[in-house]
Length: 129
Image 1 (cartoon, rainbow, N blue to C red):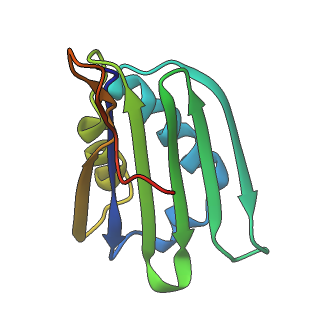
Image 2: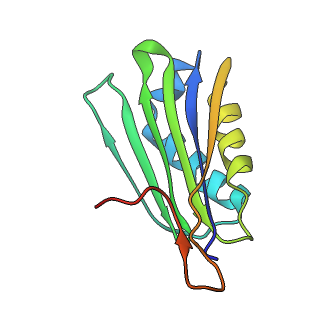
C-alpha cells in the first residue's frame, strides 16, 4: 500500500486583512507543514491585484499544502495533501483555520492511497478507460 490523505475544505468569516497578507500566509503555510510533520521543499504565492486574493502553495516532500483567499468575502479554501504515515494533514488544516480566525469551517477527507492485494489487483480511485 502507498498511503496518502487529502484534507481540504472551506473557511468562512476569516480575518480579511490576513487574507490579503502574502507574507503572513506564507509564514502560516510553512508553520502548518511543520505541524503536519512535512518537509517544505518550496513555497510561492500569486497576488491577484492590490486588494485581491492570494494563492499560496507549499510543495512539501510528501505532496503539497495550498491556501486560496477571497478577502472581499472573508473566505479561503485550503488543501493539505500528504503521503506517509508520519504526517498529520488534519492538524495542518486545523492550524491554518485557526490562524485565519475562521468562524465557520467545512472540512473533507479523502483517502488517496493506492492499495495492492496479494493477487496483484489494485484499488486506487475510479478507473478511466
